[in-house]
Length: 144
Image (cartoon, rainbow, N blue to C red; front, side, top):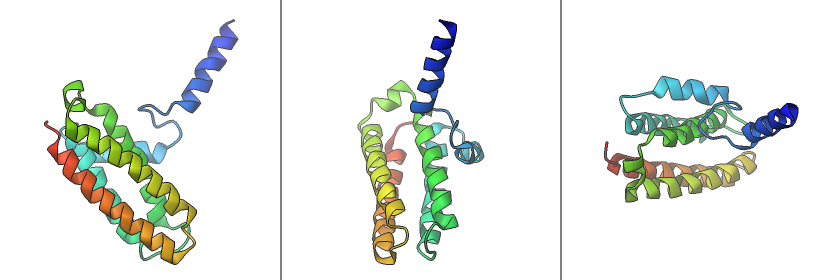
């Protein structure tokens, strides 16, 4: 019985990323490095890191350091949503940020798929940068 419960718990940990950096230790390090005075500041700092990495990736090809950094930074950014209070989560700006984050995830997955194709890679990086700028705006609008 105990072994069954332990196996279910381990399985749940693998499937549910939650607020943990179990599978992305670099993301947890980035999160800790970006830690600010509040959740909003932390999220904005990571978005700036993402912007820099996306711009760097525009000058690289294939599985580049810029895309690898962007991947870890995305996971660190996703972690910041666990830090917002219930009052902040009840705002329209927060909801819009969540929606844009889901779009960002889709764009990043497409970017990863086309990282070898220079034209599609550039188009997806441009779209990613556009979403990052939009996210920056909505994160700023979330009350502290």
